[in-house]
Structures are given as structure tokens and as C-alpha cells.
Image (cartoon, rainbow, N blue to C red; front, top):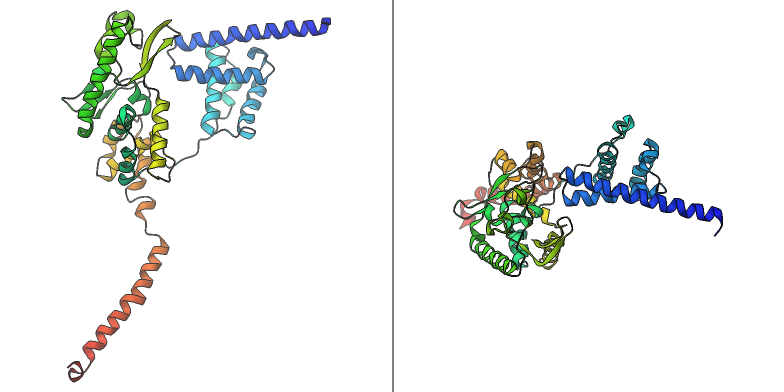
Length: 365
């Protein structure tokens, strides 16, 4: 190996070591600030792409030009959505401000992509009924709660036994989006099925305890504050995972909640079997929940609280069904058709009746 090649190899190893240390520090700061696992994975992914796209140079040596070029490539070459581009920017903002602790004035001038206004996909009541026919088991019960209680998929997956109140017929959503708690209705039609699911979850937990496991993950270091809470039945997930998994953070085996991707696949499969010609996801059922409540006369503020929206303007997107949007307007084509019907159907009938009344009485007999 020539000296130049050897020096390049050494430089590459040094850059790899620096990058590895940087990623470890990003992960540490994310966990100290209690970011979710999904946010941790997303931010690390974007930071790794940013470093890789710039020749694995240290982010301290990069600036506004590199960040803007990176975001522009995402939009122009990869054609990512505006939300994806904004997530990449948020990851870089976190890197510079929270990890490297570098306040760069140009970060405030970077323009965020404008997210387009989208109308939510909503299923009709008949379509929801057809969809629910093709889902069963624990995934089917999750799907029914998404529509019947307006839950997000992660809120349903993380539901714990202690937060289901059969007596009051309500579910308490803990630490939802925006770190907010709220209460949602528990549909009567799933009461019996949900009771059986809780019994199955308790049986799974008893088996785990007998095998030396049975400690569930608790947020905000509650397992250190309440030593026995992690193994108590009340804290277990209503929808436990099929298998134990290894928690790398705590270095132990424990049972996680149901995989949300399994529910998503079940919904897509059911939509195909029900021959629903719409883009149906788990969140579509939440949209349908809100829309059908408003259609039935529920107050928009009540729907806002049930959905957990901070601003009522977010909930107002569903008012397109309340005779103020496309569904409440008569198309000019239909109006013309109605006028044509009046001219070519009603008018001849009226002329016939008029001529009959004017006809001489002798001819009528």
C-alpha cells in the first residue's frame, strides 16, 4: 500500500470512528430528553444520511449550504413529501442545537416545506361494516377500537389493562400525541370481546411470570419509583406481543405490545377483500369515527376532545360532510338534469291532464 493510500485509509477509519461517537451522543441526548423510540430511529436515520451525503465530514465543518443542498435533493431528486422533508430538517436542528450545542443563525432562515392541505379519506358506514367482517382475533378487536373509540394505532397498541374501565364504559388514553391524556367511549359492542382479551393478556402475563419474565416496560422511570409496578397485572398491555423480545436499553427480555404493522396489514387485506376502492389505513378509521360523529349531530368541541386535538381548527377538517362541503352542494349537472326531467316528463303530464279536463264531457263517456 502506498503512503497516500494508507493515509486515506487512516482518514476513513478516523471519520468512521468520529461518526460512530457522534451517533452514540445523539442517541444519548435523545433518551435523556425522553424522545420516543420512533423519533430516535427517524432522527438518527436522517443524521446518518446527512453525514454520508457529505463525505462523512464532521457536521461542525458543514453549514447552511450543505443543509440546504441536502433538503433540496430530498425534494427534487427523491421527491419526498413535505412532512418528510420537515422531519429531516427537525433532525438536523436537533443535531446542531441539542447535541453539538451550536447556535447557528442560518438555521432560523431555512425555509420549511409547506405541507399541502389534504382532505381525509373517510369510509361510509356501509364500508366500515363490510371492512369489519374481514378482521378477526386481536387485530380485529384493535380495528374495532380504532373506529369505535377514535384511537390512533399506537394508542390502541399501548393500551394497558388499568386504563380500561368497563363500569364507566370508557378508555383512558395515557400520554397520547402531545403528551396529553384523554378519555374516549368504550363501545358496548366490543365489551364482551374486550373482557376476553384482558383475560387472555392476564393468562399470558401469568405464564411469563412463571418462566421468570413478566416485567413490562414503564415510562418515565416508574419502574424505579414503583419497584413492583412492572410485574403487576394492571400495568400489562391489553394486546401483548406474540413473543418475548430483548430490550436493548434495559438489557432484559420482556413482552412488548402488539406490532402495529400487523394491524395495518390486516386493515389493508380486509379492504381488498371488502372491495373498498379507497386508500384505507388504520388512521382512516379514526377519520371515519370523527366524520360519523359529526354527521350524527355531535358538537365539534366534543369531537375535538375525543380526538385529543389541541386546536379546533384541526377538527374542522371533518366539517366537509356537514352540508358545507362537496356533499352539501347540488352539482350544476344534476340541477340541469332535474330541470330537463321537469321539462320532458312533468310538463307533458301536466299538458295531458289539462287537455283531459278541457275535453267535452260527452267524449269522456
